[in-house]
Image 1: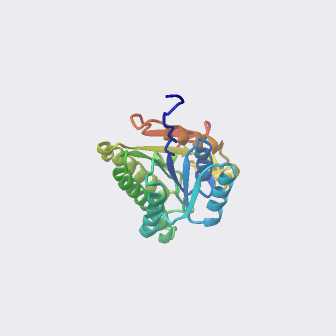
Image 2: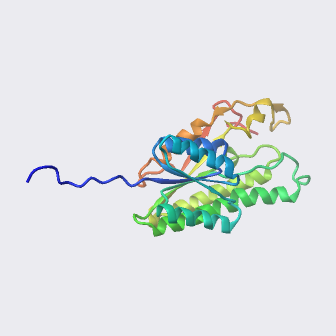
Image 3: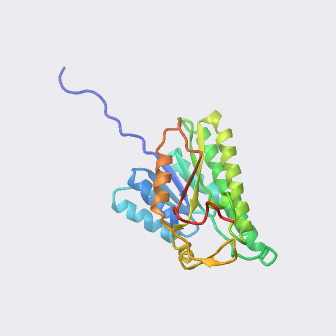
Length: 260
């Protein structure tokens, strides 16, 4: 008998979901994970930027699926995860990134709809996506996966007039810890990345001045958002037997240590 009769197998692709993938940190993380060889599901409210990323990925021989999603809507989140399970059969990593802020106003001046928008997106949206990921990761074979939540420096201490955002990010910390505990029986691990002053389209205004705890307004140091993407990529690449529960990545000289 001659020749090599051994069978070759194609490695099973690793599937990642990034919410809020159309811009900012989400886009940066999605592009980085595509470079690392992940198949990436792109979720966000706006279809056009998601599809643009997917088309760019296809041109490079990478695989991305754009699924327009409103994370505050249970039916929309259900449809997102149904599409993932139908197309790929599993999910290995969720980067729970979608989030919003509110205007920096005294809380008695802030319209209540701004409070509800922040809580619905940053807390309920994170919970809905984590819940759906948890269920899929329990059902799939092999069982397990990783959920990475986008926290914030504000999960530790507030900026002036940011009660809704600060409350929401403290809640994300609670969700992360609960996931890390509840997921043990199913090989599901959870992490939180607390980000400070990553330069994106939304944060660029901070280079021109931000209200400080002493009442002054001052520009703040910023960092390239790719450093956040590198941190998420590192966590995503760990085996499920190892975890980084909490990680702070920040512009080194930003006013966090000693804030207030």
